[in-house]
Length: 246
Image (tube, rainbow, N blue to C red; front, side):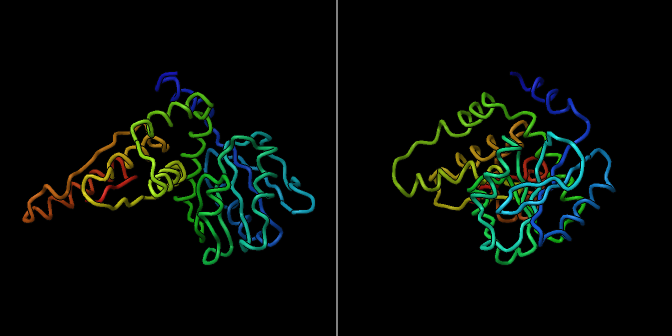
């Protein structure tokens, strides 16, 4: 499958279909999410309520096969996350899940990423941030058959070699960080492979079709500090994730 074919597949449906899944105590947050989507163009949505004892129950009519699932959750300890994600995966297999919460200060976002969430949003929800995440994640869904995912893994990780437990622990984080729509800071001694990890994160991310632009800031003269920051800003505008430090 070529890049052009992937792009055509991603653009096949002009309407992004969103399933909103809320817990009983997060109704207001789900209401604000619906309001933002109602104001926007190019989105349809349906709503489901989740209860641990009964699973998912539809609360409104809408698309039966969503491109993206957005889950509004309460306090982290109050929800059995493994049961919750199992309940999502049955009706919505292979769909990206964005998570937001009414308790951002105590919520374990990294925990839900490890359990299968694709990304998270911090409240208060902002329209520009929400819509950008949904559009990006819907593109991932339409391009993410098993063959393409395997290809991305091969491109991103096949050149990373190491066997120590500490190294493998960091390597395990690469696919998880690649799913997040946030900058990643990679620090370490010169020659330890920061750029290799940065490339792996880039090629596993939704930005894989965009250029990866490494900038060696250490090679720029000190009196070029203004130019250095201009170059960094330009590089971030092309490929804002990830950034290699050193």
